Image 1 (cartoon, rainbow, N blue to C red):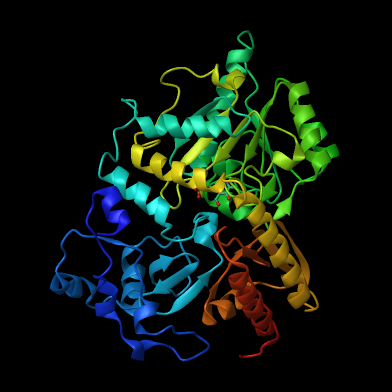
Image 2: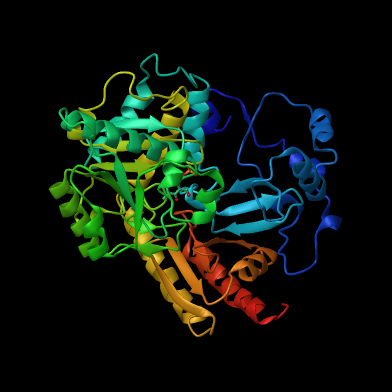
Length: 469
Ligand SMILES: Cc1ncc(COP(=O)(O)O)c(C=O)c1O
């Protein structure tokens, strides 16, 4: 029995892997894809032994090659996602494997989620142990992991209290409600307490009606209008324009990402965040930092706002917090939390024992001495390397970012580069208006893997000039 098995009390089998049964090397496309060999290409981090028979597994896999899955998806799933033509089956560390057995170096982390890579052994052990004890109880009852996670979040941040949700958009939705309630509570005599919001160009805060209203991209909002009213947008970084909009009695809160992710990897200037802090204080408005994407070690600091020395009233978190399980969190000061009463907000699933245990294992690892400095060092190394290898390409306008959230802005659409990378075994994302290559690798990535990625990216840029390679 392995130490993992002994610790979790769950029988764990590395031997059985249904993917092996489905593997067919003849299906591999020949162009530029590195194939790792039958045994190493197809991995599973761990298979909890629920005694599946190889016959049942083989039956399950029948007809589940990439083509069959994509065709079935097109018939069965609501068409909201223009997916890359890739059916992923397993992952380990910074590597992903598709159902055909091809290996990919993952610089997407499931959109900045898998900070510890895929199937981190401590995370996995924590999840298996907790799933074996208790997964869900609802918020009708207390549970230990929720309180333990809240303790750690409070101890490591400006905040005094935490509210848990299930995603980034829900965390922002809760922050909107808390800001409105705070205004009502602090201005009991006002007939109409401040209820409006200020947000910025390139912002992304989520897809539900409130968070969507705060999101700058019009294509996301207009098909669903009317969204939540009362949101004004200002150019990100424009102090003068913000000054006119942040008003006492009108503005409930200002939402800002210290480092914008979806919008194209733009970092706020210190003077801008300082101005927002001062303007909010003067107007009695709350300052909300959305660190759903940039928080929790991504920039090389635990919180992206830390190096600015400017603190919000509310911070929202989500993506990396539970290592791939769905979670969101709203961190707030006692001053704001004191406006919130029983029944003001809630969730059936949020803060359950399983996700909170997973999050504790992520937070403990990311907070370890040396982890964050390694993210900064690797980020600097990668940015220098990208500048060296890609900087002279005429399509590259700027390489920017902090830690391991890096954007390569192009003068054209980044899609051909993303496709060319994928064909060479590297997964990357776009951002902005589709003209930015977004690189958000697992924070545990090695310098060797980053060098490999830079090499592939440099070659993939040739796709912009019509070179086939
Ligand atoms: C800054 C930011 N806020 C909120 C969200 C929404 O998070 P979710 O997709 O978990 O709802 C995202 C998602 O990309 C984000 O980047």
